[in-house]
Image (cartoon, rainbow, N blue to C red; front, side):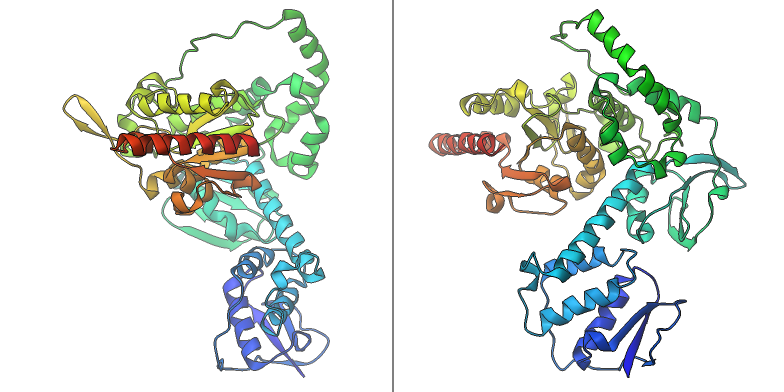
Length: 490
């Protein structure tokens, strides 16, 4: 007779891991274990409770397995628990290098499951649309979403971080997620009828979407791939798509007939609105990585969104303005620094101060024209300590980096460079989400956000702080060589 393991939830990785650890310790082979979730019907064959085994000795599994298992367990495949346990059993029973065998059927299947879960999470981030609802406790923003997999609890943190100042609920057929501004709560699933079809702000959102729609970049195939029709009924802007597509050929012809205007050599910088408005309930889940959006307009919208956020850090309110990046969309190289400095804060442009001028010189020596690269910072406001008439630079802390990271990642998704270059520890942490050592990572290519390759080097301000002239010359030459290497790898 086998054993039955009943898990409390369909994606409870902690419960699965604890149960699997006990089964391995008791010597229970995969074919002897029956996995199910509370409420599921028992299997056809009799199965008893799992043994209360005390491990005779600890065993270790590769971190890669744990990371893969924590995501793959959210897949809707009913065999996911058994598949994960079979892989764990093999790892602990003589195949410690199993994770390195990319063609193994179990690893192939688990990897595909994890990829599907990540894709579903991306869709949830992109296509959730909140509507405002009047309640006795005040305004609540409510959204309906139909995930393919069990991702509601895992992705709740994304929406908490992004919309911490709002009171919201996301309703799905299986689970509901609720945020009251202080605590997250989960409840049973619901129906689409619980979410209003529209609200008073929806016409404004549709007008905004129509305004940023670029007919010259219309790619229906890419739109359908990125935004499947199953999500259209949840998204107000989709009502505009047929009209916009039908008008695209005429609008493109008119654009060609008008011709292009010469670029303004001194573009007017954007300033934060004098009276920041609360974020609109419509389109709160808008993903600026959508391929049908005009990236330049989306970057401008991202800047306006940042300027209007009510939860900015105190130092951001003392800064002159937010400073986003500059450079061409689709640049081969995207350089990410720490934060704007004094001159950047005043001019509203990145890398125009002393470190920026040194950076420009190094780029030129490395054969990288600055106007062909995209340059930005991880933190978008100048953090400083006022000292008389001077403003002394103050390094961002981990909380500052985490606050601005969603904006940086959306900026990366809009630019879509071939290679990301992290200039210094702050940029490296913002792009990877980890506290990595620059000198240990320097000169190597690692995985960055959205699977983009990431190259790390020092920040140009580091060169300004080297006191010895000979050492400064050596470090500068090494920095130039890093830039050459990055350009070659891009």
